Image (cartoon, rainbow, N blue to C red):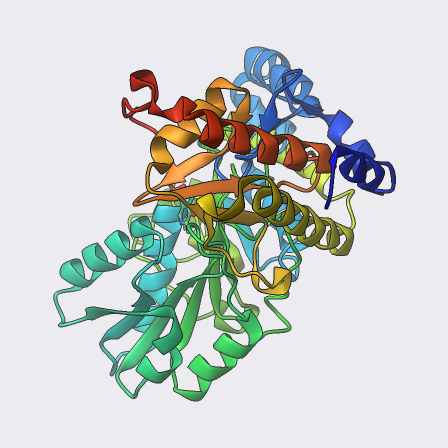
Amino acid sequence: MIARIDAERLDAADPLNPFRERFALPEGLVYLDGNSLGALPKGAVARVAAAVTREWGEGLVRSWTDAGWVDLPRRVGDRIARLVGARPGEVVCTDSTSVNVFKVLSAALALRPGRLTIVSEEGNFPTDLYVAEGLAELLARGHRLHLVAKGELLSALDTDTAVLLLTHVDYRTGERHDLPAVTRAAHEAGALVVWDLAHTAGAMPVELDAAGADFAVGCGYKYLCGGPGAPAFLYVAARHQEVFRQPLSGWFGHAAPFAFEPGYRPAPGISRALSGTPPILSMTALDAALDVILEADLSLVREKSEKLTSFFVEAVEQECGAAVRLVSPRDPVRRGSQVSFAYPDGYAVIQALVARGVVGDFRVPDVLRFGFAPLYVRFVDTWDAARALAEVLSSHAHERPEFRRRLAVT
Ligand SMILES: *Cc1c(COP(=O)(O)O)cnc(C)c1O
């Protein structure tokens, strides 16, 4: 049997515990949704305020050079590179994850001209699949999106597979792919791989270069804590950069944007992945968040993440019994930084938990999803969330009508 005191002891021994102070979290709230919207880093408040009042208010257009705005996508990209095992010049911060999937998938398909199949998995995050569908339609060359079950991915690769499009950590179940092994298998089949690191970056180390990865994208507002709608990132392995061409060939990706030439010439290196003017205020918030995240040792972050998720699984199973069913892998090594349980009336349960100050989220059809951002989630939070879940289920609090009304964002 475990109890709250065990969680308190784990917190006292946690080397990352001091990081929580760096985030503005409402008193008394148990926030287990940092995999959807990361918490606000306190340092971002002053940084964004200064960017607004000084850089924008006083510097005006001069800030493109004086405040270094024009290089911000590459500077922030180089910092994110350190989190994903890439070298400087392989990552750039830009656009949304959806838009970046479009860009790298286009580039990857162009590098495999004789092949027409994009392989992905049935449970992949829908935006990635929708973008792949849209791109195939736009290309009108007979590309098709072939969706298979997770266990059949590698056997689905054949001589027609151009690209394997995968999310490293499953947004619903939290199951984690073996990135180096899958990358190797795809390369053996002659295909390229696009990795979506939305639920990876900032939560665990990943070694893109060492794995021989081709392309990757990821999210700025989840574990990277860049704020709502923060720009995303995009990785192109150095060996592909010279031939990397993407169709959103805007002026920021031009070799000489201020030469205003009529024809497009791609910039050297990762800059050719850029399209238009970067969102400076959002990117500044993300840059400030990275100050905190880069201070943490990612191997400690991963170690804590495995312990947090394991403690939560144990606490929920002890306190709730068989009422809920674990849908995440039981082996912590095979999980990302989240834990999901299935419950038939899951949506209402999440609403009842939110009303008690425990924020997780719901994913169709029946998934209660809890994310554990290791820099600010404590072991006591996992215990308190498990207890709140047990109380909701035993008191049937979720059966009240107000918890069944669907909100626009779940
Ligand atoms: C959150 C998430 C996205 C989000 O894409 P946006 O363009 O930022 O809306 C994309 N892919 C995955 C796997 C995600 O989890």
